Amino acid sequence: MVGVEEVRHLAHLARIGMGDEELKLYAGQMNEVLAYFEMLDELRGGVELHRMIRDYDEMRDDVPCAFDGDALSNAKNTKGRFIKAPRMGQ
Amino acid sequence: MISMVRSSRLALSAYELVEEFRCGSMSIEDYMASLLERIESIDGRINAYITVNEHALEEARKMDRLVRAGSDGNSNSGHGGGDQALLGVPLAVKDNISTLGIRTTCASRMLADYVPVYDATVVKRLKGAGAIVIGKTNMDEFGMGSTTEFSAFGATRNPWKEDRVAGGSSGGSGAALAACMASIALGSDTGGSVRCPASFCSVYGLKPTYGLLSRYGLISYASSLDCIGLMARSVHDLALMLRAAGRDEHDHTSIDSTLDLRLECTDLKGLRFALIKEVMESEGMDAPVRDCMMDAVSSVEQLGATVEEVSMPVLRYALASYYTIAMAEASSNLARYDGVRYGHTMQPDGVAWNEFYSTIRSNFGSEVKRRIMLGTYVLSSGYYGRYYMKAQQARALIRDGMMMVLKDHDAVMTPTMPVLPPRIGERVSDPLRLYTIDICTVVANLAGIPALSIPYSMHDGLPIGIQFMAGHLGEPLLLRIAHALESAREGKVRRCML
Image (cartoon, rainbow over all chains, first blue to last red):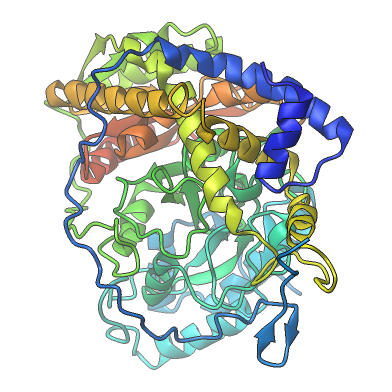
């Protein structure tokens, strides 16, 4: 069972601002969905997970390439050629 | 604007349209103008489009000039087809697929004014083949939903009965085709989001083999399941659109493949199809859907196929596995919306990082928040082994089970959706009940195999679709099945309103 306080913690981890009413609503709905997911626990080990249908044996070289376009044109908080972000500390 | 093209022509298939444009019996500009006029007159009710391309008419005019100059033959080479197989064809694009210079919102307040600086590879290739983007279609926010009710721009209505949902999450694309507001459309399919609206709107919807269509430019929801899907009113049109397939250097999971997409055979002789007992016996299936399915079995048998029932008990875990994995991947993928580089934001001066981030992200819609929270939970320490790892085990078992069935059978046959299109508002407040209607579609995404929804019949004015799933790169077989049924049921099923 997920309680309101645990949902508050999850909302913090996911960085989604939520009011008390919303937290209560999600707690109820999440419990219902998680109760359904519980059936997965019936499965026991012995299943090999990492078989690939095909091999991804080629790794792209980590080489930067120029992007043909203004990749940062959607940034709104700018100052000169910089993008403004909030401060990291409290 | 005065209507320049007879309205019945708006129902033409893409391949018929291209012939008309080539021989000059109709100009692309006139056709586009008529289509835009139709959108203007009926989309206020249907709400299929979030944005209409304001340059569509100008692009049509340019294409007409190319036709007149006779240079439509070799103006493009490489992927997309140098033969301009989609010359002048109006293409609707789901609003989570990037379009250069055209707003792409994912039906979210978070991206309400986001304008991509590049075209998705699939869009680029279809444009290369001559298609013209007519607009961006409505959807469930970030692809999370099965009804197109979870959109920040309002629900899309089903053109066949406007009090019903159009399906989702690519509901705008399905509705645009059914209401003749586009000729072909792109959607995306993470757990059935192309096939569900195709079924509810009576059009074709193809979820290709994972990797066949590049995901470059598709805004991520659950990357191991996401596919761009194709929607059309004819099987021939799907074959034309599959020209967008093939390896793309921008998507490491894309496949290089050559498919034989000729549609010559109109029977199903020698093919073996499997019916899954657990699907057919599920309690949640509406009676008209079950009846339609039995009728479809008779139809394919008459066309020469044999149909056998198989049992796959592991499908009991399909929904739980799918939703656990999809939500986990979503919680990770959607962490990128931080209000710094793009999307919804606020003034950052004097605001601490956590507060800034949390405030901005409170603008996600309710279903997106729910899935991010559940995804965060199933990945959190202490629960990872109980949910996420088990979901991956179930996925492996389901994939193996499907491979086994497809060793002995050419395709698996199910209804696309177990229910008729619900009324708008009917299921929206009960998430779990809403998730259960994806039972037949999530299997193909978990297994990475192709699946096609075929419009089959109507019950009380509501469309019912039948789904076929095939092995990896089985698209030619799926098109053959659809083509045989399309020919056999000519005149028995309507694919648009006109």
